[in-house]
Amino acid sequence: MPSYNNSNQNNYDNFNSVNSDYGDRYVEDNQEERVKFLPNSLHRIWLNNIPVGFKSHWHSAIEIIVPMENWYKALINDEEFLINPGDIFIIPPGEVHELTAPESGKRFIFLMDISIISRIRGFAGIQSLLTHPLHITKESYPLVYDDLYQMLVQIRNEYFENSEYSDLVIQARLIDLFVRLAENHIHSDELFPDVKPYKQKEYVQKFNQTLEYIDSHYTEDISLGTIASHAGFSKYHFSRLFKIYTDYTFCDYLCYRRIKAAEELLAIPDYSITDVAMQAGFSSISTFNRLFKQHKGCTPSQYRSKHTVGGGYKNYH
Image 1 (spheres, one colour):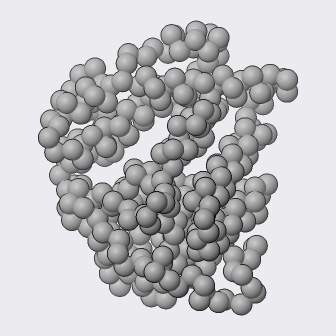
Image 2 (cartoon, helix red, strand yellow):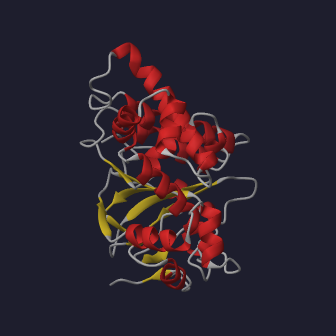
């Protein structure tokens, strides 16, 4: 495992500062954590050694967890992830999650606002990789693990050095990290295995453009036939390649995008369930209720009720 410290010794003195005050995190009544970024910054990084967990919450920032000493656990959609030292665990923005800490240990916690990065042309293809948590280990990502780990080292060091251009440098390194993840995906041996090499790049571009289109038009009535024709494929060929590229069927991905929008809208108490359904792109309230329950395991009303409980630190021991 590449060294995450400035030296071979476990010396964290450089990271115990006001910038690392993990105790000031707070979750609102709707379980949203409004991240307290530092002034004029889009990032917050903590060295966390607090032996208590953090109860169910979500935030608009992406979260990256890198344990240094002892394990850490995350619970997302009823799936528990055990994160060991050296692992990189990425929680997408807006994902409700619960964290459990051991009685002793240290880990770096990154919370990064990627709203500006997400508007860069081409990011939609990367966004499709962030539809679920990413548990990155040397074994699961052998070709890019070292690069990703060192990028996080650079981001962390830049943050705590707090130079004049730290925020800009961090944004650049974060883009590098996302690009490496995307390159790892598109150069996978399993991606478009039956497509000739000279066509690979063309297909990647087409499906990234398709994802950008969905991201901009998910509230509209988008049909499989229309979007397949827009991409230049037959419906059958498009469906097969889209599933390979995103691990979703077209209909499932469109539904996923609408459900994610609905989750955010449900946090707004002034919106009725019907308002949420229509603004998220669903054609009827019955369809919305059925699909939401299918994907989230509860109705929209139950989800809203479940996620209007106060949050904060929670001792699990």
